[in-house]
Image (cartoon, rainbow, N blue to C red; front, side, top):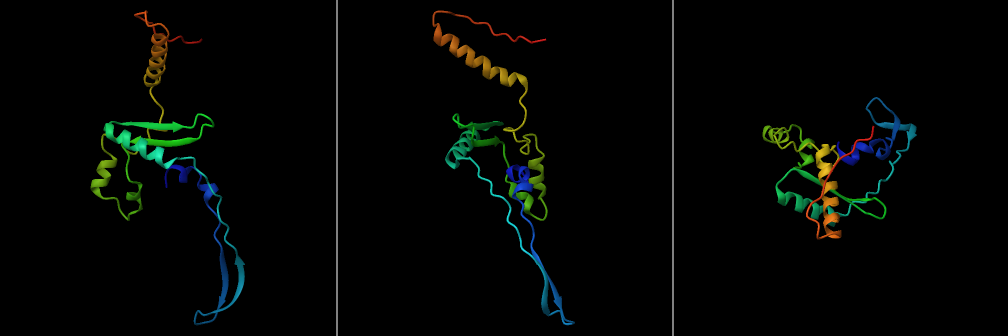
Amino acid sequence: MMGVEKSYEKMLRGEWGGQEVEVDGAGRPQKVLDEKQAKAGNDLHLTIDLDVQMAAAKVLAATGKRGAIVALDPNNGAVLAMVSNPSFDPNIFSKQKVSQKDWEVLQGKEHPLVNRALSAFPPASTFKIINFDRHERFYRQSATRRFTQSYYRRNR
């Protein structure tokens, strides 16, 4: 079990139902002694937009690089797409035994089991994005300037 199912397992899981039945010596039911109704689990509504998810997966796969794309709705923060590359088919775990070939791919240098959309980024990666944004705004506001300084101040 992985992903959303793993995170919300307790909420999604219902309760088993069943009957306690009296049987005769041949194993034929005679009467119901006790009965417990099954209870359905709770519903979970996701905000993933299939078209956005598929487009993000296609773009990221086309790059052939490791990475992630997360698309959020700016109005409410809803997750519209969340893609990590490289990925893997989780259905390989539903087999009786994972094949040697599949196991080698999962354990390979690309680390497809790592969900890059949820993993922490090294600080440099985050700062590159921030500095690029600042750089772009600086040059759009003042096209005559030729240099800018980036710095990082640490509060103590």
